[in-house]
Length: 110
Image (cartoon, rainbow, N blue to C red; front, side, top):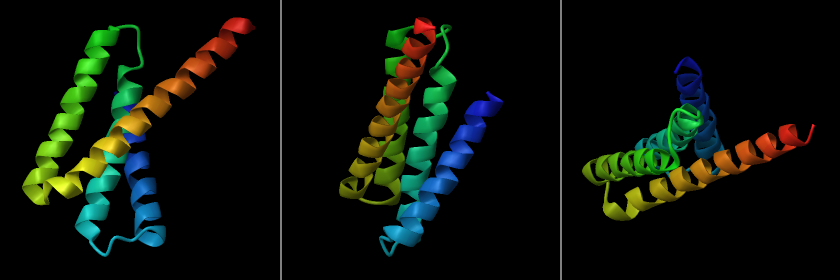
């Protein structure tokens, strides 16, 4: 759990810095919201990357995470601004498992 929180924190900070300095949306709240979406995807993906969770449970929990992001986005911003957070979350989530499966396949060959 500690490492998952570390992934969340590092992902959030790095994403915020990239958004703020290179892709500034002129809305710091929106930059923070997108950074939290990015960080939560990394943290949740790392947390779920154990044999203790079945694939349907991993999928369900990722949908819960996306639902929370959308709800928070709708409450703070408009739906149009909340949708990119889902795209960031799902892209990072899939990328994590792509890298993890590649790493797993590579270790199986040795």
